[in-house]
Length: 114
Image (tube, rainbow, N blue to C red; front, side, top):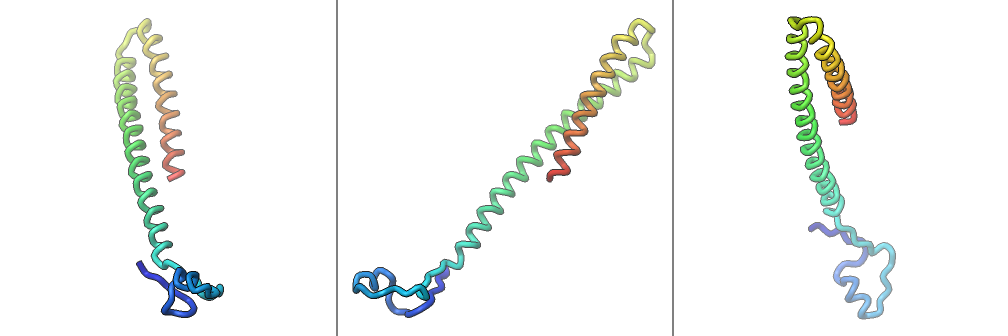
């Protein structure tokens, strides 16, 4: 720990107080490592938060990739399906497409905040 002391050296505050000596304002004690500790703590907290955010975004991306694969599969089936099957598959494809689009938009917004 680094201490910077302004004023008279040789007596601590407690020694002055015990001797009923005045402690003028220019005898300010400042711990020069305090800002460093505070910044280091903030940095460490942000580092953890970034790691957690990165993991969360990665999980979301993996989920979107699964939906993308499912959409590709359903589109392939839709191409070869008969007319009756196309209606059911088509609405499922539309729903999945909407979900995927919303997921991509959320991911884009989350990345813009980072």
